[in-house]
Image (cartoon, rainbow, N blue to C red; front, side):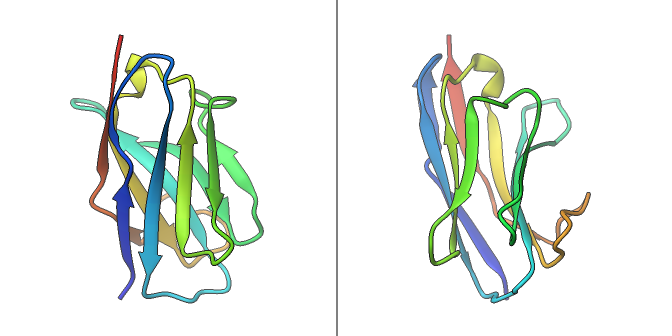
Length: 120
């Protein structure tokens, strides 16, 4: 059973930084895509960043140049380094994973989320 557990959320002032972590267990897929999503109250869920087993990354336009997605060498932890945070980055952030190499529209596995709040 694939399990994803996020951590690292919190409250920060605008311009600050946070690093989110997602501990992944229960899978040893050679091909995969993992990603970070976020959802603010009253808004639709937004894809923030993805990375696949080839190391190819994608970012939402709203976070390009500020956020960075990466994995540890054991490939069991996903990170999202968030710099120059803005109040509009405030949301619940979710980690997601899928066995497909090409990142899908809908991911199969999800964590429970970690809250990020950015104050002005």
